[in-house]
Image 1 (cartoon, rainbow, N blue to C red):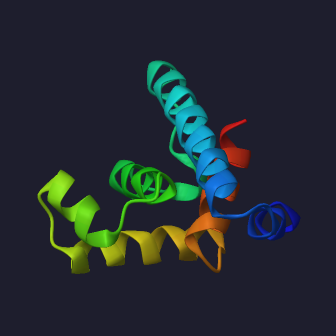
Image 2 (image 1 turned 90 degrees about the horizontal axis):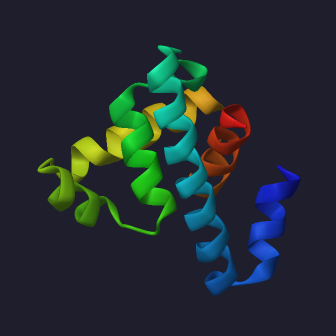
Length: 103
């Protein structure tokens, strides 16, 4: 939670940069986990991880949906499910928690 609060204090530009780095790190860890057949963190599905990653990159539900050929409502459900599994109150917190589980 302190990491999420810190993101709020650094400003939008820096927060996006931090979230982008988290997403990049998550992708690296995800590839490593796939190579070792480990399960996703907190029981997240591959789709939830993918959607949360794109959300962490700053994409809206509509943009994510267009990229993945899914409706914005479906994207919202994936984000909500991932947040619930992670116990996160928002997207930024979910990205931080996902990054922590991957490190």
